[in-house]
Length: 351
Image (cartoon, rainbow, N blue to C red; front, side, top):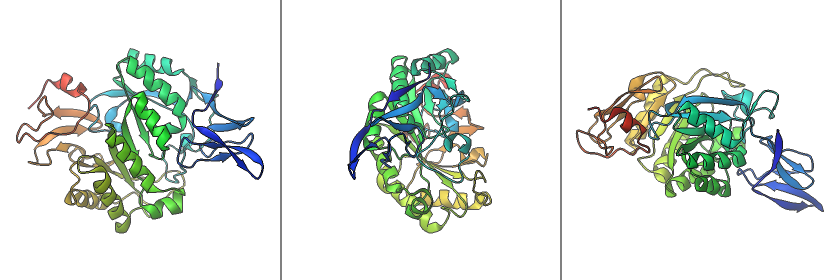
């Protein structure tokens, strides 16, 4: 039975004598009037209380390689049952998944799975974990939390692909529930966020740092969008904040944009992507990948100390794994930060 569920994070605000609901799941903190929905289109004020509409209705459910998220240092070689709903806390005009992220939930187009059923499906398929993706997963906070708790009971990991704009309270709950992997999109510099998204990128970096400080795993994804965030002032801001707040070991994926939705500018120049990657390495970021160009040499992991090729990837698969069992480079002994041991069990060390 498709149902509403009372939301977890909200409070009452009184404005001009009217009691309104303030949602506290993302950093927009929407103030929602009676019968109205918040910015993400999933939360509604019903009689002065906040509810999630269509809890358990999913727009997509499929097993996918963890590398496609992208995650290159989190359970490499594994697969995650990936699921989504509808709606988002952003309105990126270049969004490739706008048919999911920028429309209202639609139970007629979805599949209904309780969190326990989702995890059971992952176990039957043989996935190593679950992943909220495609649209912004944190707007489905209550579902993610229940699914993560179920996954932990069954020995599966939990991860999300997110814009990183969740509230601190929501992030704390996610970490407590066992969501320890975060592929976080950084959309650009303050100018990009202010002009296009009406948001603040410092919130994203602060959340990413909070995850790292609390023993979670983070990989940042910088989609370089033509005429949106591709000036060198903007690029330098992103790279400097990354090294300053997240440190040298946090992977950075510099990805190519292609025209989609309402953004029709040409695809990102590959030479610019390569220049950004080189600059990122110059300032000390140790693991820099260039994605969406289908070049295995740009998506493989090298030892930042001696340069040895350690993990060779092709089309979101690992074709060669050369790390020692303790995740050290076999040539110089430099330890590579990787979470999860699935690939080690599969390869039993190939050198």
